Length: 503
Image (cartoon, rainbow, N blue to C red):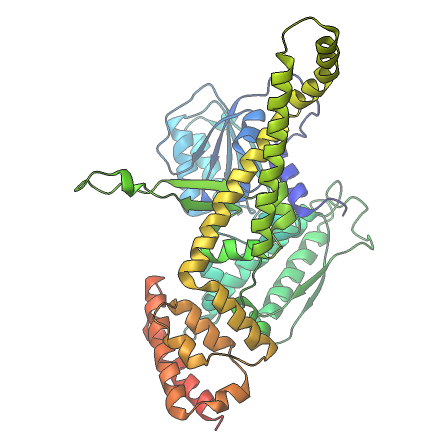
């Protein structure tokens, strides 16, 4: 398992885009031009791994959403990459009837059922397009790889398998089974792509055990069919009895609820916490320049810019785990280094423009020709460095604005004191009562505040005030995020009981 999951999923996607054939290395010929059709799930899987340029290099001239309005391109093959849902199957059957493309390469993110496969076959038969359906594959790529050692199960409809969804008091057995099946399917796809059979360990009596049992059953059923097993042949390499088996540890979130509420001071954590950051892409709003607008003019819309923070970004890879103040210093150092290299190129250019034919000038010209040639050859690297500096300058500036506006530095210091049980220079009630504080942050601080001595130092009336303020502000914040307010009446009562029992 030398190759990471990011590399393996990228290889699988490139193979799929090459009509499920291994890409030919060092090929100088033109690729076969094709159209890529995906749904939102497929888009989320591809976007963190392959750039538009890489897709173009593989012959993808156009990439479109399955349910968008698409014009017929009858002389071009189409590669589909979608989830096998009823809605998607119906749209694909419609494409077959409308004869949109020359040929169809159907790739499903998860395994398609026999009944849905028969629906496609009937549609192809009815549209006389049987010969146009070139290949049908189950890709088993139902997970999203964000880094070499990190993946998530899904991005679309993620609230359906969230912690809140699993722990709803009114959840039915059917809904719980559906959630477990979704999680198991994604984990199964992960290990198929990895080409390894895991050793599974889980906590007892929780949802983690349900997932473990279902995943174990699915793995065993696949291994039992030796001819059609997904873990034999090229995918597994050394064979299913390899001793290099990964360990899969499944635990319930209830074991450690404080960690998601704790905010670290690292660059990556702050970007994820305060900015619009999804699937390795951060979206920023630029200032609209109101100072240049005439009086009475309609305010300009803010421009939005997107930046990709990928493993190819050397600065991001080096500093994403660094404290934010160090990142700001590193950006400044990179900028000074770039300016020094830029000044050197300019100096060499001016020297090359020396006039005259005296021996000193000719000697100086010959000495600097090699240096200028080296500088010119490094220009692409220099331009890429400048692009990354501009990118992280903008991102770091946006993070700094949020830190100042939301007093995140004060919260971080206070949170660290709570975690280390140090003496607090400001009471919890004063922090909660700060009119400039952000409601969600206040609620999080109260939840993290588990020190008995601090709680005993306050009166019952102060505790009631804290609980009331926290519940009201948290409810308002949750409403803004589309969550129902009435669900938090019982936690409020329980919080009263918990805090008052301390006296």
